[in-house]
Image 1 (tube, one colour):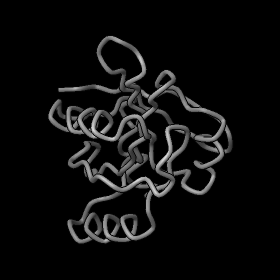
Image 2 (image 1 turned 180 degrees about the vertical axis):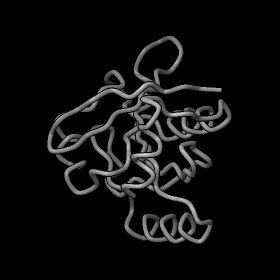
Image 3 (image 1 turned 90 degrees about the horizontal axis):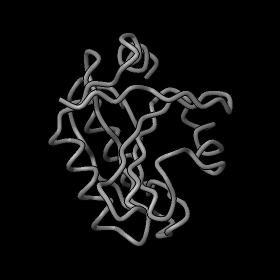
Length: 145
């Protein structure tokens, strides 16, 4: 995972196709009012796929990737010869910024980036990416192409 993280952060921007961002937004809208969650696969510094997971918490305030989904998705990504580039989830009542809960959850997964999709506002969804390591949050430029 460190290899994927370093490759994605090498250019100080995450490159992701519009269709993948649209998939994350669709997932967030479908699961509202609960938070959605999943993983983004990547290779060579580029996000390559969105893998939906069930939120084991089924909550509008927190997420936990269902353990069966986590295993299934991780195996599928590895079989494709790719890495877990990011973990994504939605915020249904707050901006696309890591909450204290998000920061604490990242302690167990420090290598992937974190993509947060906020569907809280009346306008277009807000999608942002962050590096969260050792309790420190740093926004990463999300370059949609």
